[in-house]
Length: 303
Length: 262
Image (tube, rainbow over all chains, first blue to last red; front, top):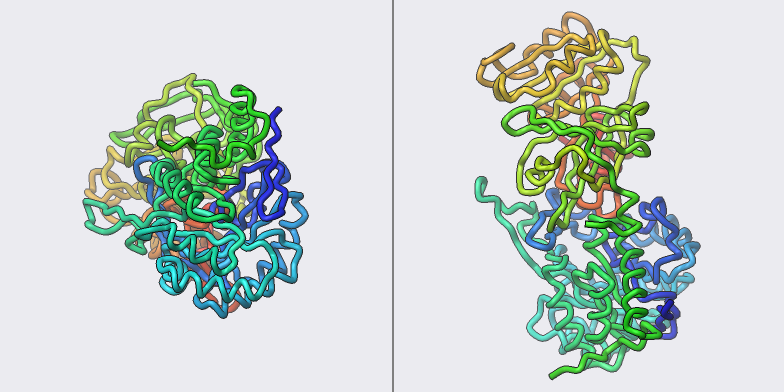
């Protein structure tokens, strides 16, 4: 039995596997399947200052080894999250990352200030949603606007602040360095890659929003590359995600530079995916005589 | 392929597999735990064997608690359902079931009308079995050959009316024609419907006009099936007309027709 625990920004995780924001709601649906305390942490559904209904359906399409989604940050709003969801999440005996987004630095700072007053362990600022017009990717695609967003949020909270980055940029290391310079405690990446599919018969895009975010095994090599690049560009920890399906994938992303790993799309088809991945990571470490998961981080011997 | 201990919890076994029409298949699955809990209107979420990232939601058309089986009838629409259609008796099948919120059942001696359009017909069968001769079942199909489960409906004792688009059997035309006649002849206490959106919209409008409660089973491209990923959105009215994006997998698939934003 390997030691799976990891420490990020002073926060202890019992293992490095965290359901990614968006696929796991606020956790309640999966608590019917297993005890959530078995998870390393939970990145809660992205929450905006006010309730949002999201984009019209269809919001999902299957693609080779992946999916496209265009949910568009449907959520009940920050006040409802704080009143109805967070207290329950905090009782689950796992690390909670409160993922949040907003259409201006001021609004994100207000949400951060509200979260700062709670017992939530970490904040994950989403500047990378490809499916909303205001906010989201608009802030994450340019180092200056990303920095401005993080500066405002940083001033509003002393809690560990993770900034979730978009792969839809020319150079992700520029964004990572910009948010590090403004006081981000960690970065998480990658959010989804902007994509599109068309129904040949109707000549209509399958997604009602026309475009959506691509995730799943198809993007895993992109995630490995970007985690590796960012881990070599910044001093702060990197939380990796993007198409992780197995314990070996998690180990690979950690070797590339990740201190912990989020799992998203795998959960959509398999509720038990995070537990299976934790077991597989443990088995792989044991088989290879590696005592701790933490020692994998950033050990790739690049050519 | 051997499964890990987690996947094993989700596995059922195909008891029988039968081709019903050119496109529709009939699968009976041994899955005692799921069968024990299932109610009419719920669905099973099947993960085809192979490189698929999404499950396929298929409505339950038969629940046998004694035998511990669920029956599903589905149409081959793409690669995933084609894979499911290749399954044979004895094969293992990965399913999450039962999921969703089913139909409201009145006492079984009440008069009801069931309306199934195309591959929306199968979820009406458990209702026909429950209401028996107190139900009128109106099924719409493109052709006589494409109609599914007509013998099964006849066996329940309900009155069945088949409508075909091409007139190859039964009423030549839409289900709304016999529906209007039935509504006039003998007012039902509930209308249940599943099928294409334009059909559901018309049925819901007719029910509303007559002040008859109506429940519709909706379809949408789906993800997790349990209400977490939020992709299968459907707009409904809540709190005095506010529009809310509900989700077909958890809030539905069965909705009160009056709440749906048509």
